[in-house]
Image 1 (cartoon, rainbow, N blue to C red):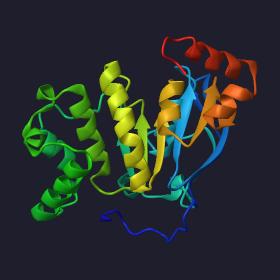
Image 2 (image 1 turned 30 degrees about the vertical axis):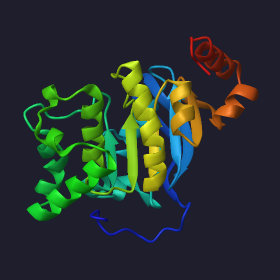
Image 3 (image 1 turned 120 degrees about the horizontal axis):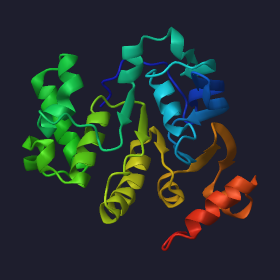
Image 4 (image 1 turned 60 degrees about the vertical axis):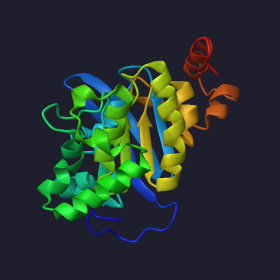
Length: 260
């Protein structure tokens, strides 16, 4: 099912997002410095780094929740600044840390909120929610609960269903498991990697957790103080760290009990 606005035909493995020499300043503070990267469809990427390294800023720039201070951002070869912002956002699913569900709406109404705004027929909305509930292994009785009556894992699954409702080309996940307990977090990580692979979308996950990145992603980008310090497989980070910071980042996480 594809309910997003019509898009140009793209071959498998083509570039969806391209960021070239992108910077972002808040006043005199540089949050992102000369960031350059391309992201291909049907691949899963992890943006890694310490708090304040610029990871979440990249996602917000992609969504045009922020505007760059310099550089260029392209989506499907078109400049983001020349695109209709609502059309852009309908082509991207965005999941926040903690889920971001509206507390006064049921899970079903949270999932359907944008589709209703777009005036989808009720039967189409119902069928899509049923399809997503099956995909996410969500019992239908949970859909009528309000967020306060859901567990953390259930709420995050509902948030992902909302992000997938319009069948977007791209999924952006900003530390989606950061507020979850370790067992729920582990279970979701194990469930979502095969799901992401099955969906065949471009997925970008922001995390500071090397183990989480190794479970979820095909490729990782490690940032430090707004600059890319290494990009590649997690195995390369461990065996061939590009800088002393990369080595320290890997060693610090391996020092955590149960770390890999």
